[in-house]
Amino acid sequence: MAGNPKILISAEIIPSLDLDDDFASRERFDILIARDGQHAWDLIEKERPDLVFLDLYSASLAGDACCEMIRQDLTLQATPVILVIDGQHREDLARCLKVKCTDVIFKPLNNHLLLATSRRILGLAYRSFPRVPSRLIVRYGVDAKNLFHAFSVNLSSGGVFIETDEPYAPDQELFLEFSLPNVSQPVICKAFVAWINAEQQPVNPGMPSGMGLQFLSLSLPDLLAVWEHISHDNDPQPSLKQAKILAPS
Image 1 (cartoon, rainbow, N blue to C red):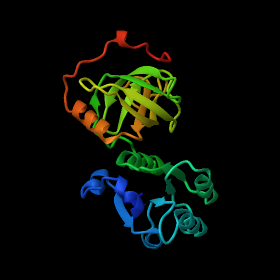
Image 2: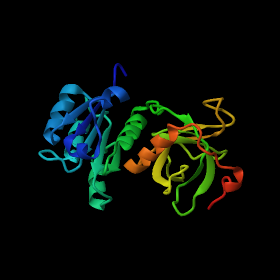
Image 3: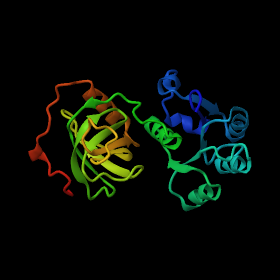
């Protein structure tokens, strides 16, 4: 992929994002903003973006209709299209599936979800966030009512690496919960498995076996708490007595 990836975003999605002037250059993306569905199609024809985020309910041309036009164009049909919808209404999901969109995500679309989805679809590295060593007890699992415990190895505002001999498969979505020192409420969010460091074939030999998790739904207060935590190096570390490693809670 020559140059920065071009990402087109329909304007209806923008209010839930924090796209400051430095966002595109900082994340090494070229961001194209479409006023509505018809403008999105015009930009797609002209700019040939690498990834498209469309609101299903976009004015002038609905997101699924625009996606269908992309799929019918031989020069554009391979373009990844993410349709953004309000909720899990069966009829909306059916519309998305009918036009063979690449993925469906739900509002609100925050910066972390935008970046995680973009990097996953485009096959880009996930290490866009500075990470610091941090040993925290992390509860995780597919079922929010049946979580396992493990220790984190490092933490960033974009994700966490946890040590485990039984990682989930890449792209598996998980529930996460962990507590930060001097913060009364635990951080609770969703994440997906971005990469695995297997014991037999480690991607990073300097790391223990485990999995790198990318945050998907980190709230602003939790994001600020994580930022505050990673800016300090002398936070107290938990002991092994505080958790039963890899045992369901």
